[in-house]
Amino acid sequence: MNSSNRLDKRDLILAKGAEVMTRRGYHGAGVQEIVQAAGVPKGSFYHYFASKEDFAVQALQQVYGPRLQRYAQALANPALSPRTRILRYYQELAEHFSQAERLQYHCFIGSLSFEMAELAPPLGRAVEAILQQSCRLLEDCLLEAQGAGELSAEEDCGNLASFISYAWQGALARMKVASDARAVNAFIQRLPLLLRA
Image (cartoon, rainbow, N blue to C red; front, side, top):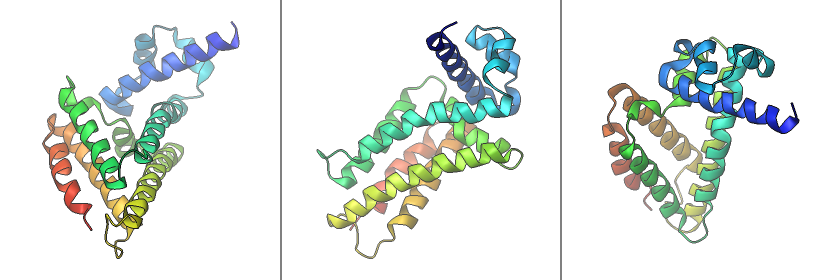
């Protein structure tokens, strides 16, 4: 098997397994269910991953690497003001969720952090690294908004970035639990009020 095929199979297991874990949680997703979703033999899983925990860490990186890249691009869009970039990004996410068939399937990182952050320190560190990177991207955009006069000069952009990030994660968790978009919609309604000069 050439290296391209090996990478393709690993990526397939990561993609399908992440879907299973998003839907069922870490404890509810067995290795057998993951390989069945990927259509590969069970031995393939352990060829690429040392354990289910190792799989979850790699799946986080696979899922959230591109998401963080899209977030960075959206928050650096020179065609829009910094404040507009932030509002538009979250509005588009909310619209995406409102069109989804199953709202509760959209919080992979939240599910893993609730279930495993304390039990599996490497997984907890992977979750925290992703959330911190997201927060830094938002803080940079908020600082740009502040420099453009869109936020008060007294605003603590690091604290505001953290608060927005925590509120968004909480809204996603509520969406998963309630299987409706009320919490996300409340976040979208409140966000412009937080981003005022």
